[in-house]
Structure formats: structure tokens, C-alpha cells
Length: 175
Figure 1 (cartoon, helix red, strand yellow):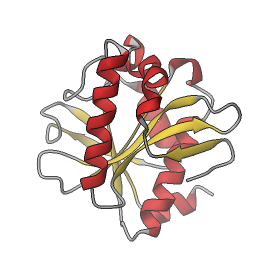
Figure 2: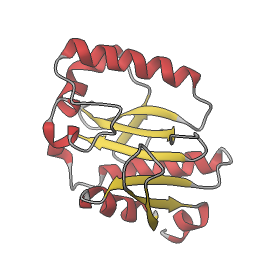
Figure 3: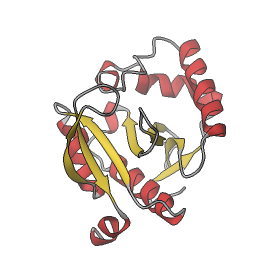
Figure 4: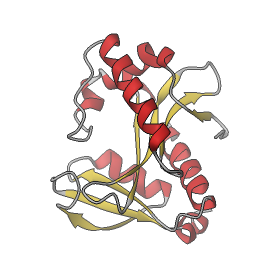
């Protein structure tokens, strides 16, 4: 997927060094799902990328994982995901992680809207985003993408989380 400033593409093992700059940063790691900790070195990052690439091959579209690359300069900015939410994999979660130097520039919103348009074109009727109650930045980003706050739950990841939902009409209304 290509947007005005971004390329969303499959992960490559060669992304490990730049991905480590994102996933090795404590400012990012503190918000990762319980299934993932801060990545400590390039070797560990390569293992994570191998796992993600293998998982991506087994996911049914529109689910997937994408590296976000800046169009000007080929810098890896972070990632965007559409993944089944545990425990039942009934709902599809939209997520994003960016290098902290790139926070506040609208990249997560741009990537999120591109993913949503793509997922809705594939026939999906709704997407969700979840955020810890203290992650104000993620909640604000979800709202800017067009997701609507629908409440809080302990259903996902065995954590108390805010839940946001996006439907095709919500994305269209934002235009």
C-alpha cells in the first residue's frame, strides 16, 4: 500500500537493524502487547521478524503485518497490523508502532486510514483498536483515524483496555 508519504510493505529480514530502533526503544516497548517485550538486540529482532513473516503467510487477508517505510529516504518508520484479537480471534485489531522521533507527524493516522480502506475493500465490516487506559497518544491517534470509542473491556489480552471501533461509514464520514 502506498500513501502520500508512506509505503506499507511486507517485512524483510534486512529490516532488523532499523526495526530494533523501534522495538528496542523503551518508549515504544512500554505499550506493546503482553505477548511481546522490548527487543534487546539485532539478532533477537531478526528472530521476531522471522516469526512475523511466518505468521503473515498463515493469516487470512485482510489480516497481516506491514513495515511502514517513509517514501522520502527509505527509512523504516515502524509497523502497522491487522491481527485477530485474542481470545477468540473474532475481532480484527488495527495497531501501529512508530519510532518515537516520528510521533506527532500524522504517520500512524495515514497508515491506519490506508489499512482501513484496504480492509474494507476486502469486505471487512469493522475494525477495532485497543489501548491501555493510560495510553492517551494511542487513543488520540485512534480517534484521528476515525475510530469511535465504544467502551472498556477485560476481554482482550487479559487486560483492562479502551476499545475503539471503525466501520466503513465512519471512515467515509471523516473525509
